[in-house]
Structures are given as structure tokens and as C-alpha cells.
Image (cartoon, rainbow, N blue to C red; front, side, top):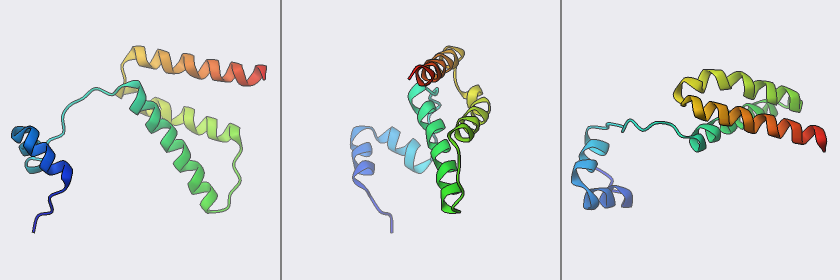
Length: 102
């Protein structure tokens, strides 16, 4: 028996073709990555790394987390446009400078 959630029914009511693509053919739209989900994913991966280490009662320094974050960044960069990369690096540099001033 198929379970129909509110979002499924709503999708069908709004656009039966979208329902067909999303739930029957299971096709995902090709949407370019923007800065918000990209940065959210980077932060999520870093926090997941932190909590995995905490789960095994390991201590981790802030510098180690920052290194992990910077190491995963290059693997994910091909998904993002060059302008977004520049913005990310500028934001990161501003954060580092702000920490050193305070």
C-alpha cells in the first residue's frame, strides 16, 4: 500500500507532471548549488566530524576542526561557481582576522 503524505498530495494538486517526475520517475532537477546550501553542507560535515570524535570521547582542538573544514572544502568546490568560491574565501578570511583582533 502506498503512503500519501501531505507534500505528495500537494505536489500532485499543484502540478501532476512534477508529481510524475518527482515520485514516479524519481528524477531530481538539475539545480546549481548556491552559497547557502554549500556552506550549510560544509558546516554540517564539520559538525558531524566533531560529534563522531566526541562519541568516542576524543578531544579535538579548534585548529583541528578548522583544518578538517579546509580539507573538505576543495573536494566540494567543483559544485560551486567561481564567484561563490571567492565569496567563501573572503568570508573565511574576515572571520580569521576578526578572531585575531578580538
